[in-house]
Amino acid sequence: MLGVASGYYLPHVRETVFAWDAETSSTLRDVDGQWVEAGAHMLLSSLADTLAVVAAEGARTLYVGALAEVVTADMSARGGLVTKDDLAAYRALARPALGLRCGAWQLRTNPPPAIGGAVLAALLTMLGDRPRGAWTHDDVARLVDVQREVLGYRRDHLDVAVDREAAGLGLLEHVTGSGGRSPSTVHVSVVDSTGAACAITASSGYGSGATVPGTGIWLNNCLGEHELNRGERPRPGERLASNMAPTVGRSDDGGVLAIGSPGADRITTALAQVLAAFANGGATLEEAIAGPRLHVNHLDADHDVDGPLRIEAEEDMPLPDLGVPVRHHHRHSMFFGGVSATHLDASGKLAAAGDPRRSGATAVSD
Image (tube, rainbow, N blue to C red; front, top):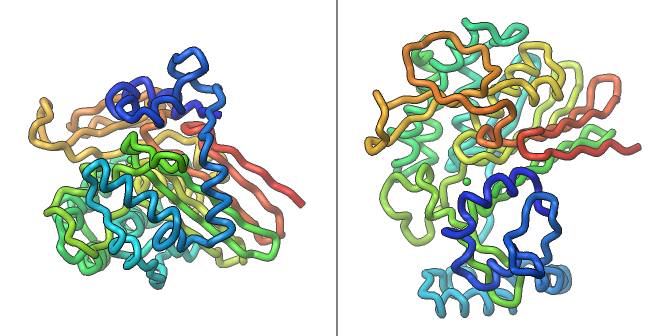
């Protein structure tokens, strides 16, 4: 079923992004040929067969097996760049998680060369113990200052770095050493009664509009997401940049947390605000996720605005006058991500919270 967030987004891009490919276009139209709306059922007719092949042959079939053959044949037919050798050579790498402290919580998040985890760690480190309750004007001013510093460093260094691993670690050294100045992503968070926690974020970006014929596989547009490709064209074999920051944590009293979000470059600012309100401000997960958000937008030179910055803020954010242009969004705008989190408290009680901005869903079972 097409969710509310997708239903909001598609009218803006369906003609430009999703209409050029016949198979993709037909998936997004009803039996009368009309574009589907939020709440309508969509059918990817070949996807079940594709998943059955993966179940029978294992994930490697996408790299060296039958599905890899179909993907690379489609790439060749459309003038794409991915070859059989590229898929066969791909290997997932396991890296030690990036650790940080937030209030009573020890957190572990996505490490460099991914961008998201390092930025999230820097934001939370610079926020310190704020907020100490509900967000005040002083807290919000500090939040804007922190985002301005960290996201500016990201734009000028991380996004264009040849060695993003070194640049990510450099960001953390920058905020801990100097103190700083005073794109259709989904996420699943799971915690069980034994204290095991898992946070997984996966993304097709905004989608390229291309469906590999006969498979139901929609291809991503990660090479087309501007904030991930500000530097030189990626070299063969280089890992792509990522905003994603799936995070798990354990509190001093034994509580367990799993959290993450979609939302392009707003992933990290959304998670930082939710984690700060939860770990420092005493909010419940549900309260922290439902609370208002802001994002400091570092603008490109071709934007017709007064200055290089603009604050994006939901209308219920208590925003002081900071001398920076502000664009107001409605309450719970999908622009600000879609945080989902699960929590096991010290007494063994399970809780979960989903974001109303993107039709987040939760389930708690015995």
